[in-house]
Amino acid sequence: MARPQSRYVCQSCGDAVLRWEGQCRACGAWNSLVETVIREPSRTNRPTGPRAVGASGVGAQALGEIGTADIPRLTVGIGELDRVLGGGLVPGSLILLGGEPGIGKSTLLLQAAAGLVRGDDPSARVLYATGEESAAQVRLRAGRLGLLDGVAAARVTILAEHEVGQIVEEARGTRPIAVIVDSVQTATTDDLDGPAGSVGQVRETTVRLMDYAKRAGVAVILAGHVTKDGSIAGPKTLEHLVDAVVNLEGERYAGLRVLRASKNRFGSTEEVGVFEMGETGLIEVADPARAFLVEHSVPAAGSVVAPTMEGSRPLLVEVQALVTPATYGNPIRRASGLDGNRLNLLTAVLGRRAGIALGSHDVYANLAGGLAVNEPGLDLPLALALASSLRDRPIRPGTVVIGEVGLLGELRSVSGLERRLREAARLGFAHAIVPRPARGRPAPEVQGVHIDVAETLREAVERALSDPVGRSDAIPAMLG
Ligand code: TYD
Ligand code: MG
Image 1 (cartoon, protein in one colour):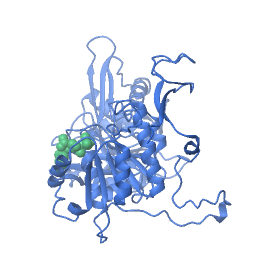
Image 2 (tube, protein in one colour):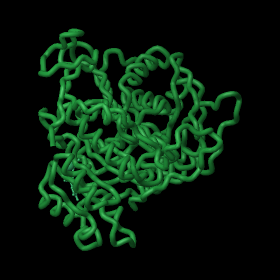
Image 3 (cartoon, rainbow, N blue to C red):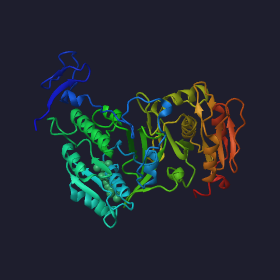
Image 4 (cartoon, rainbow, N blue to C red):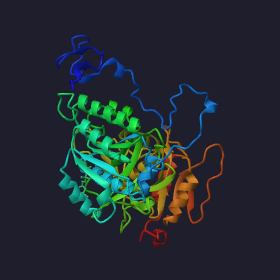
C-alpha cells in the first residue's frame, strides 16, 4: 500500500510545507509546524466529527420528528465510573481518560475491561491494547486485581501494540464490545515519521481511533497522561475531538482518587466518582461525603469543614490554612486544590473588611485529601480558616461553613444549602455558619444542626472565633 503523504502544517496560518522548519515562512510563527497526513480528497470529505449514535443518515430532520430513543449504554459495573460517564459507555463513542502518570489509569481501565465483560454473553470481548507495558506486565496487574480467576481471564484480550493501524485491524477481526488504548502518548501511526507523543502523532492516532469507533459502533477508551499543569500532554485539540474527557485526580501518594468528567457529550460533567487505591486496585468509596474529612484528635486552628456539592452529591471537605509572618520579600500566597485567585482576593477582603490583616504574612491554603474543588461557596470556609490560623484559634468542633464572599465583605448564599446541611447533620455536625439567604427567604432549618446566619464576613469571623472551643457535646459522634 502506498504510504499517504505527510506535510508539515502551520497551526497558526495553515500553510503546508514538506519539511519541518522552526519558523513558518508564511506567517513567521515559531514552532507551529505539525506533521499531518494528507489524505486523498475522497477521504477528506467524509465526516470525521462525532456522529450521534443512531444517526439515520437521512439528512436533516425536523426537530419534532427525531425519535426519542434513549442512547444505549454499556454499563461498566463500577458504579462510580458509570456515574461519571452518565450511566455507562455509549457504543461508538471515544473517551479520553486523563491523569498524571502513576495515578491509576491503567488500573482503572483494566478493572473497567473486566467489568464490561462480566455479563452472561460469553462472546463479549474487550480489547486492551497497551503500548506502554508488555502483555506479561498487564497480566501481573490483572493478577493483583484478582481478575485471573473470573470470566475476564478469557474475555479480556491483551495486545501489546502501539501502532493504531494494527490495533484497529485486530479490533475489526475480533469485534470486541469496547477497545482500550493505553496510552495515546505511546500510540503511533506508521504514516507519520514523528516520534510517539508528538502533536501530529497524538492527533492522527486519535482521529483514526475516532473513525474506527464511529464506523464500528464500538466504544473506545484512550488513556492520556496529563502534565503537572493539568493539560493532556500533547495537543489541546485532542479534547475537542473526543466525546468525553474524564480525569482521574488525586495525590499519587495518598489513597483517594476522584474521577471527574471535564467534557461529556452523553452526560453531565457535574458528577464525580470517588475511589481509593488499595492493594487490589481502585475500590469505590462507600460514603464519599465523608471520604475527604480528616480526623483531628484536638481542634486545630486553620481547619474548617465545608459542605460542598459535586454534581448532585454533597461532599464534605476540609479547608486548611496556614498563616505565618513573612520572612523576606513578597509574602507567599499558595493554594492547592483551591483557586489561587480567590485566595488572593480573600486575603485582601479579610484585611479591608474584617480586620484580619494578612499583608505581611505568608499564606498557604489547601484542601485535605488531595481533592480540587472550584466552587464559590468555599470562599467563606477559606476566609475563616485563614482568620482562625492568624488568630491561632480553632473554630468550634462540629461546625460546617459555606458561603460566597463579595468584595464588600458581604456574604452570599449557595445553592442546595439545605441538602448540604442535611448531609452535614448525617455525619454528625451540629453547628453551621451560613450566609443569610437571598431575597428575604427564611434561613433553612435542619434537624440536629444549629444554624448561625451571618450577613458579613466580619460577622462570620466573630461568630466562628468567639465560640467556646472544645465542648465535648459538639464533637461529631460519627467522626470520633
Ligand atoms: P497505574 O494504573 O499503572 O497508573 P497509570 O496508568 O495512571 O500510570 O497505577 C500506578 C500505581 O498504582 C502504582 O504506583 C501502583 C499502584 N497500585 C496499587 O496501589 N494497587 C494496585 O492494586 C495496583 C494495580 C496499582
Ligand atoms: Mg499506565
